[in-house]
Length: 100
Image (cartoon, rainbow, N blue to C red; front, side, top):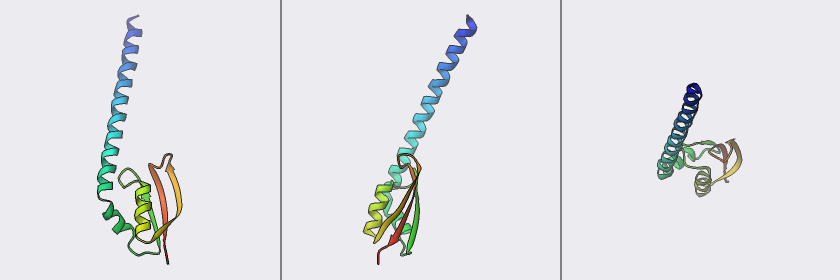
């Protein structure tokens, strides 16, 4: 009986640790993305430097895809391809071409 109780406590403790770790990773990702979005002009200047073809990988350390697509449009580029690397757009490869 004591072994069963110890096993249940261990499983509950493991679940709690996993939940806390998952929440911490999520909070870190959201904080990092907010900081990157606040610096979006730096990302735009670096990515849309006049090259005819631009490939940009969106992840938790960059502004989200919709922000990059809007910035591309403002800098004379159009989205020609989007490949989701992680479902939900958390990571994606965006390909832009410069408008003539």
